[in-house]
Structures are given as C-alpha cells and as structure tokens.
Amino acid sequence: MILEAEVGLGSAVSAEQVTYGYFGTGGGALTGVSLAVAPGEIVLITGPSGSGKSTLARCLTGLIPHLYHGEMKGVCSVDGLSTVETPLWELADRAGLVFQNPSEQLLATSVEEEIVFGLENLGLAAGEIRARLDEALARFGLLEMRRRSPQTLSGGEQQKLALAAMTARRAPVLVLDEPLSMLDTTAATELVAHLTQLARSGTAVVLCEHRAEYLENIPGVRVLKMGEQVLDTDGLLAAPFQSRAGGPSCLTVTGLGVRLAGHRVLHDLTFEVPAGQVLSIVGRNGVGKTTLLRALTGLQSHEGTVLVDGDRPGLGMVFQNADLQLFNATVREEILYRLPEPDMELYGWLLQALGLGSYEQMPPLLLSEGEKKRVALATVLMRGPRHGLLLDEPAVGQDAAHKRMLITILRALANAGQIVIITTHDLTLAAQADRLLLLGPQGFVADGPVARVLEDHAAWERLGLVVPDWVRPDRDGDASGVWR
Image (cartoon, rainbow, N blue to C red; front, side, top):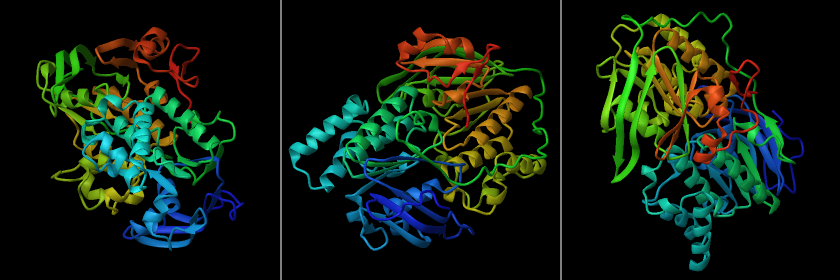
C-alpha cells in the first residue's frame, strides 16, 4: 500500500514498504505501507476501524519495534534515523505520539507533573520548563486542574492533558492517534487551529482520525486513506432483540446530585426518559456526562432518586474506556462470559453486525480501540439489560459504517421497548437521536427534539460550544450529520 510515493531524503518522518504483524494475532496489521511527511506538512490518515492506523503511528515513532512485540519488515525513519536501530529515548527527542487511548500514557500524580515530566527529560532549564508548562496549561484549558490527579479527569480532559504534555515538548514530528475522538466541538476546533500553527512553524504533523471533517477545509492538508471498508452486513437479519414484557418503561430521575472529592459535579438534575426513544446527552469536556451515566446505573453514589417504573433500574452500560470492562482471553469468551445458556442466534448476529466475526479467537485487548468498544457493546447486549442501555462516547474509534450500524442497533433496542441513552461529543452521531439534551455546569440548558435544540444558538453559547456547519437540520426538520 503506497500512501505517498515520494519517500526519501528531506522527509521528517517516513515509512518504506513497512509490513507488521503482532504476535498472537494470526494476521498482519500493516502490509507494504510507504509514506513520507515533510517538515511543516499536515497529513491526515483516514480509514476504517482496524485498518492499521494505530499500528502505523507506532511504527513511525519507534514504539514498534521497541515496545510492541511482533514481526516487522521495511524501514521507518525519523529525521533520517532508523527507528529500529535508534534507541527509543533518542527518537523521543524527535517524534512524539499521543495515543488513541490517552489514559495509557499518563504516568504522573498530577496534571502539572505530567507535563513537567516530559520537559525535564529534555534537559531544559527551569525557567523554560515553567514557561512551557504555563503555556500548555492555558492552551488546553487545564489551569484549574493543575493539581489534580490525571486519573480523576474525564476522558476528554485526559486527552487534552496528553496533547498538552506532548505538544509542550515541541518535537519536530508530532503523530496523533485520534486526537479529536473525546474532545468537545470547541476543543476540537481549537486543537486543529493549534496544529495548523505548529505546522506553519515547521512541525510535521500526522493525524490518524475518523472525525476528518474538522480538517478537510484546512489549506494544504494531505488526506491519505488506509484500507477498505470491512463491515459486511449483506444479508443481515433484523436485530433479534426481544420486546420488553409489561409495556413501555420510563426512567425517572429526581434531584440527582453528585459530589466527587468535595467538588459538586452534578446539581439537582430532574428529568425523564421514556422507553422507545434514543436520547443523546452533549456537554463540554468534564461537565459530568460520564458521572451521570454511572449514577444512573448505580455505579456512582449520588443524591436524589433514579427509578424505572418505581423500581431500581436494570441498565447496561458500555464504558468510555473499554479496557475497564474487558478481561477474558478471547473475544468469544468475553462476549459469552458466565452465560450458562447463551442465545447463540443473538451472538452470531452481533458478531456480523459489529464486524467482529474474524476476531473470535483474538485477545480483546489486542484489538483497536474501536473494535474493543464494539466487543464491550456485544458483552452488554448478550446479557439483555432489563430496562435499557447507556453508552459513554460510543463513537470513539468508529468509522462511518460502524456509526450507522450503531444507530441501527440503538433504534432496534428502542423499538423493543428499551431505554437508550448515549453521551457523545460527535454531533454527527448525536444528530441521529430522537432527543438531544445539553448539560452545563449548573444543569440542563436545553432539552427537546434534535433539530430544535441544534438551532437553539443561545443554549450552545451558554455552554461555550460551537455547532459545526456539517451538522444541521434537514428539510423535514430532522437533524442530519455528514458521515463519509
């Protein structure tokens, strides 16, 4: 696969006929990939989930072969240095990588120390470290969090921290693996502007990203595609979800509030969610969306009441970080774990619908982030939650085809009488719901049909969020997003 023919001298980072396969996976993650990126260039790499984008990012920065075990052929170079022959510490001075799952690269005990750690390893003077630290904290909106542990941050805040720590190092090559996946629309727009500035100053920027619409109008961005669409739903039967006995349910939340470490995260929330509709919840990074879902499932202690038809709710949840709910040796064992009489018709349907058929015998934690999210979804659906399903950032790692299939599954659940709630920063996904709820620091600021809420400019301004041009109501009053 030749992503760019001009491989050679003058490249800040390059790959020549790189083939790679992880040990234990039974297949190749990359096959004959060639690429060259010049100083000051932005290259956007797109492609379906599982096409090898993360593997290429690891090859370009030397994590493969130094940290990951597998078989590599071909040559990757950073600033003219072979990534195979050059020690990783030396490559780190020249190329930085922000992981697809940012929690995997956060090591320090505070936000400030996370940024300082990388700067101290560069041997910078104390004054320069302080200046870069303050600039990074301000640019990524982390000033008020500087003393907090990275593990207490939301997924989006962790992503901001990983970006702040890496960009503060000012390496000549910056490789970002889905850097927009957990950012709200304003933060995503600001990051793209910052990356554009870095490129103008000579940084070579490589982005592996599904939310490509944020970059397609940036002058000079080179878009390269890896792989072909692999989701095969030809002949897929209707979702075999059983309609809920006893009629429609209704989730009733009254006076819900949450305090974390002495800080009030959620304030006196009162709302209802009837079965039969898909509800999207949108808000800024760190506003409490994940905390809200955890409270609804009973995983988070809270004030107020959460009831379904007067009883304790039986809700399944797919976490934002799928690593937290995957622990079995194979995908098959994960999905069927401790099910004495599993519904094998549903199991087979989920494998096909979620594009997991070829991964049954693979360890779940070796999959891409998008694939891991789909395995986690399958495990929850196999257990048939009594009242409904909650999904925290389900768009992370998903290509357009898998997002469309996700909506199809959610609508089938709603039609079967289930309560369905998603939290997301991907407005193209949120726009496919029946109802949109905007959550701010003090509570809800808008709630209603998607098209109406999208046009409530005052509500979005109160949250400090932008609505991108590609998310808009269509002529019939429903909302539509652009999925390419």
